[in-house]
Length: 102
Image 1 (cartoon, helix red, strand yellow):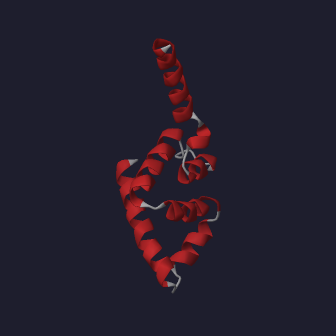
Image 2 (cartoon, helix red, strand yellow):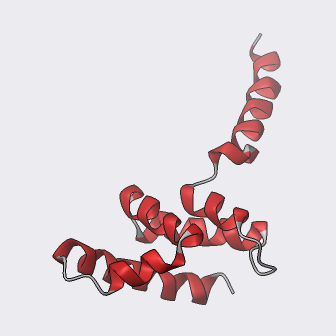
Image 3 (tube, one colour):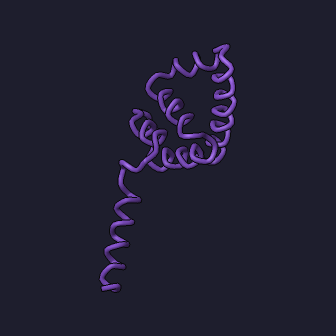
């Protein structure tokens, strides 16, 4: 029984790891972009950096920028303290993603 379970467990793990639904919010938003630079590998890399630099809440907010770029400008110019702190984290994320994923 144990020998039969190992291959099945490996197949299940492979399916879970390669399932596009398991992609993060940044990666999904990036993959939806109609830009040549938005390749699957680049989007995956950007998501990995997001996982290191941004909370899930920050990732959800940042993912909206792909669809609504003007929202980034609104948040950047906001006088709201929470938005200002988010922008600093987002800027650091962008710098790192640009260095690692290009």
